[in-house]
Length: 288
Ligand SMILES: Cc1cc2nc3c(=O)[nH]c(=O)nc-3n(C[C@H](O)[C@H](O)[C@H](O)COP(=O)(O)O)c2cc1C
Image 1 (cartoon, helix red, strand yellow):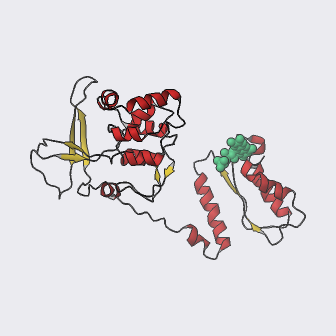
Image 2: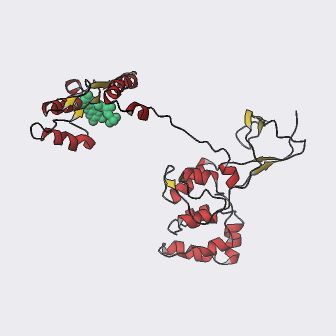
Image 3: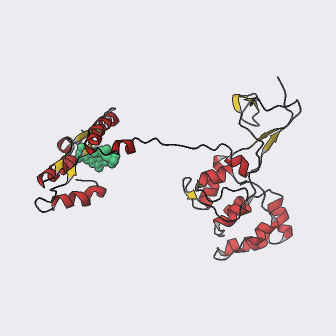
């Protein structure tokens, strides 16, 4: 049987009136798996035969791609080469046109207004503490030649958020990591008007763990939320409760939205409420 996406085409060929394919030039390359012993290449060979029977002109012999063979792509390339020769008129050039890629290594740091940062290479990363708790590491970086420093300087690192935190935000907003978001409007430190995966946006541009402010809590609406969540949210509108239950515990906006799962927040409002991701600074550099 043809696959679902080929069924309409296959049925069309099957029920086509006699001589339907006169003046039709065609070529078939079909993939198959030899485990289907009795129907190996059954669909592509049927298509090839039906086109011929209807008066079509076969440009090249049917190509065969055995999906169990390592040479599958080479077999296709060889067949495609014969096929393109038959087509003439510059098709080969179009198929073989180069793919060009532009790489922008500065976009994130420029948007976040950290233009002075440059890339360094971690040469070694060794755990120097004992046990699993309070792990300490000795990191050695190779920094670009033009970057100079003295003992006592700060080392600034532009991080990405931990995957677990990013995942929590994705789950709370019912997003998949590879959903593409395009932000437009106001957001000086955000990548505007370019599609970016939800993962990359949450990991690279916003601070997901920053403590939520009183004003942000007050801006949340309980509309449509469960009674329990509405009551809890209202309790946090009281400054005393906010101070003891939210501020003192360093609760972030994401923590709060997880605590109150039925409270609705617009994704744009959430992203805008988050501060730009912060640089982490490491002091007391030692030279060697
Ligand atoms: C449900 C199923 C049925 C298949 N039946 C046949 C078959 O009858 N004959 C054959 O040669 N290959 C058969 N194959 C193998 C496919 O032709 C092969 O996996 C091919 O690469 C599928 O292309 P796709 O990966 O683009 O879907 C079958 C594969 C599946 C998953």
